[in-house]
Length: 108
Image 1 (cartoon, rainbow, N blue to C red):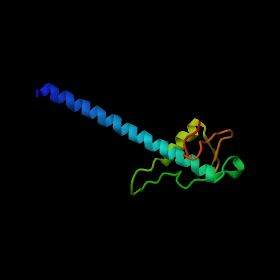
Image 2: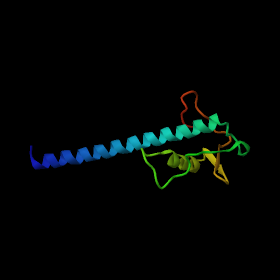
Image 3: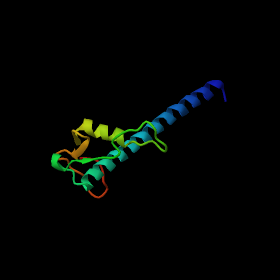
Image 4: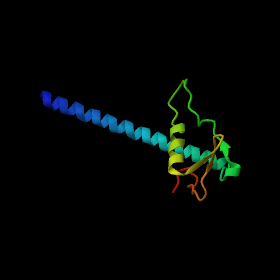
């Protein structure tokens, strides 16, 4: 195998690894977002009166273990408008937000 083919194969392998890594991170973010929406639904946080605090919404400087995608997913849900926040870090689902059935999926 020539050197050019080896270099081309390595570049394609690196691009494939990058795409796979981004897909996995995106899947984990979606899963974390679904978890947050399901958690708010189970706590019946549908309006400002019933807003709840989420213990995983804060990031810590010292963390042991796997990466937690929930704080970033919560920020994405806030930017998207699916979740609203009150003063004091209390969260609730926005009015008119539709949740999917038993699968606990994302908003429609």
